[in-house]
Length: 330
Image (cartoon, rainbow, N blue to C red; front, side, top):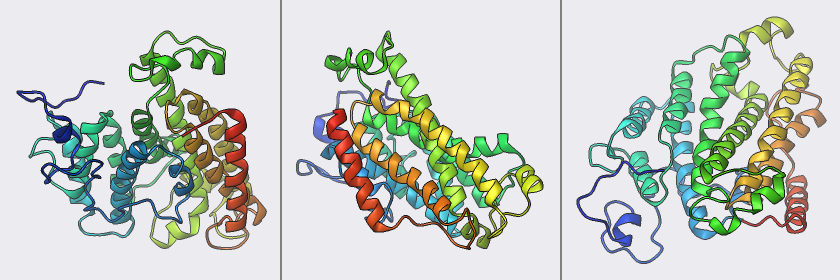
């Protein structure tokens, strides 16, 4: 992807990869840390997978996580700065010069500009993410399943698209030696790197939607306490209000839907250049939340379903073993 940056002379490697506001940083200097989440929290479902990433790739993904998690927290907590900070990201995503001084005018956009210099990605995906944040700010209703899928694409699928561009795809210009690997794994020949990337983005967006559906099913009670309802109105009419003990049928249907999305989205993992093991583990841990909802009686009691630590550790060990036998790395 071509960068939107325009410069009169080619920047040095130091200038191109250094966080804003620093000059001649030491080698390996990290991204701006003005946000609220300098690193993925140990309790995050994503943390074990991210530890499997190569150092520089992990730094990039953590930077993205920091930005998106900060925005999400500002919105969830009804912080009065939420709309302004989301607006800053929208302006940055639309700005012709991604790292210009007018574009990078918030902690999040400064981090995004730093990240974009290291690894360009489709900024329109962030506009879709921000549309999901706008939905949450105004507490818009979700009328039907089409609205529901659109919201899950905004809040989760958009993140998958950006991740593909941070992780790279096999057979792209930066990884030509793995061009034949994609044919071996999938049994289908892809003509060029752009075709692989488009397919990976589509399937990673599906995986992101699966994770967002999982979030919604896990957090029904917590969201309702904050005046937010993500279950489509048509499903509430069909199954009734999803209160504890009265939502098993709804959850059975939507868990099956999420499982189908996970199966379809898993096809993205062999297409990635970096992060195959990391994404496989993250998907397995996230999908286990659905199994925990089932084990707890499909919402029989109030509150969110939490996978026990011992079971998460077991899944991490099992997935790492599968990664070794399956040849997945990073």
